[in-house]
Length: 350
Image: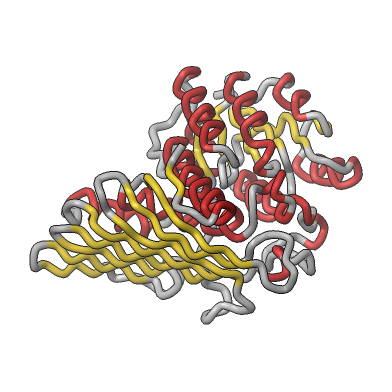
């Protein structure tokens, strides 16, 4: 069997720290092309993995012919890069948030469907066994019609969003460019785009919710160039309401665990997810269901989306727990929030 031909567009700090090592766990790949800014670090990464083509022009990667492609470029470039990769014939894993503009996210999703390729978004939590089990509980029992949804997140991003340092897992050899995270034209915003996109990718997947309108408050202490804290109230399709909030913390309670929790209430029950404390509990019509979990079961990694991408390249059967339409719904929710914070008014989905 021919090896799966791999391309990487945007081999930045997180791609180097996570995506490339996850790809390297598969021994049946052919490293065809890689693209990023900076010729020295580009050559170093290319040599390390044995890529045949290394270029600062992403089109050289696609012209070399790839079966699967990782898009790790800044958010403002995702639409161009992901669409081009899909149209070249590659299955694509795209970093979150998918795009800044919801129309672009839906366009990528439509492109994937049109060309018959998989579009996988880098929502790593959705692939953890505890999250898959939680989703199975929702599919088997459910909570009835959603009435209220609350999501809260806290993560160590103060240095990243104030241009005073990097995120804790950044590779020393390739620290992220500041503007990738703190230039709104490239990133789309601050904490919401950098972190709440994870929370929305998890919460909207578990519940199937879609934001209809919202009102947001955002703050940027420490003279941060982008917001560090978000508090958003939403109305979802079907009439449910809820809140999504998050902030840049100094430290996490358990050091390595991200603080991320969700509670969804329906007319037939409710579900609680707590990634920091590895807890899943569902109440349905008088029945309490709790998963037996280990302390590390909620610890984040992004291996799942990469494994799914490789499976797509091999033509193997797999489940896409982070499809393009989920990415688009998360972008819609973020877009509502940023427009509301700017206008000071309730904003509706475009």
